Amino acid sequence: MYLKNIWKVVTAYLVGSFALIQFANIAFPYFEIQSYVGFSSDQIMKTLFIGLPLGLPIVLIAAHFLSKKGLLSSNTSNNIDTLENIGSYKQKIAVIPFANLNKDEDGAFLVDGIVEDLITEFSMIKEIEILSRQSCFDFREKKYSIDEFKKEFDLDYVVSGSIRIINDRLRISVELSELNDGNVVWGCKYDKVKEDIFDIQDEIVRKITISLIGEIELSSLERAKRKPTENMTSYECLLKGKELHHRFTKDDNEESLKALDLSIQADINNSQAYAWKACALGQAYGRGYRDDTDQLISEIMENINKAVELNNNDFEAHRMLAEVHLSLHEFDKAYDHGFKSFQLNPNDPRVTSVFGEILIRIDKIDKGIELLEKAYELDPIPQGQNTSDRRICALLTGYYLKKDFNKCKELVNNITDLDFKSWLLSIDIHKENKFDIDNLHWFTSGLNKFLNIDIELEVDRFHLNNKELTDALVAEAKEVLN
Image 1: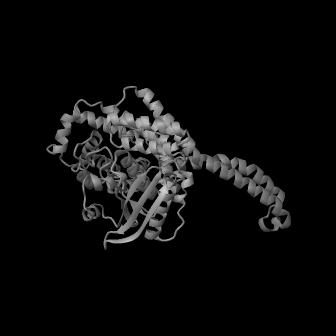
Image 2: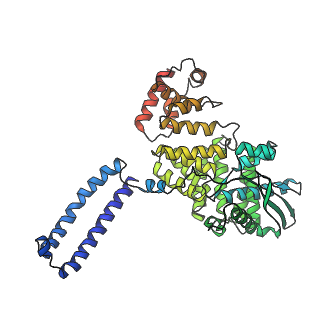
Image 3: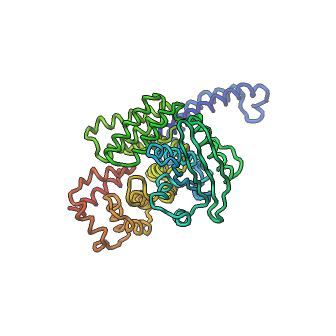
């Protein structure tokens, strides 16, 4: 980002200098310049030809110090200023699982996959808020009543429906209900061939969005740029792979990869199949399902890069690239991919979470915390997790960097299974505020839990964009644990 800023200044200076010389060369002959300024046009032109090149080093030195101090505007700051006002109120909706009228397993994965795609389509519309897939499907898993679901997530509307699959035809019934009064705002029934599924999804999202916020230009509904494939075999294998990926077991992970490979074989240009294969491989890496770590990482990057090559508007791939570059402490690249993913999908909690994590590390702490709070609100318990610890730990990091002691003190007590980062950051901010922690449960339990931890490695995994702070935390951890 620093080099980009300097290059912008150089380019602007050269373009401006050239324009000034051109203007002077054309304009001066038409005016009696000497009578106004006491110098002839030739003298002024000579001064410009000598002075402008000499001025470039001065401008570069000034740009260097301004950029280092963060006073020179950059892509990051300009992009941050254009982010949506996250705090403004938006209609909040949930798409609950549709009823599978076939009552068979094969039909179930297709029905749930179509609903998941609908959730993704809504999540790309920044004028509304939608619950995450996990929270939406919790309606079925936790057997919520509509009233309980509404109160739990403070919902305004719910989308529900049913799907019957008969050979190559889809029969879909869908309706949008307003939850305060219980009125059905919009509903429709479709009887189409399977190949029309993308058109059906587009119409559902468009009609419901218009019902909520009126006639607006929804560029996010330009499905042609995102449509994964024209091949229904590839699409069905993609949905099967995603469904298996969501189960988080080793066997299901292996079956997920097989389904995604079949999706790719059916259509080698299906960018989403590559992106989800990278997700499944990342799951295998994170959960220790495979031992060939180096080969696994290589496969993950190969599939992410292929997804981006096929479709630069694949938010999943940009989200994963943001996570990869954050883990490598390449903060500029992490920001670029995080921002791209957020532009494409501002409601997906995985996107808002990773982008928020990046922002708090590049001194955009308030905006980062807003995104982390939003991820926590829409998806309090992420897929594959049993608690909200991951969301709370991310928030604690943000409030620690903001030096908000009271919020950190509150959050650390809400974590079920304390991780090393939250434990150490909480120690540091408590000590900084001269608060006695010797008898606090979270502190004493951590003394035994983290006794034999590799301190330097684990603190490096905090991915803090501040070497002085990182070194100080390593020293503090060694003092406490040794």
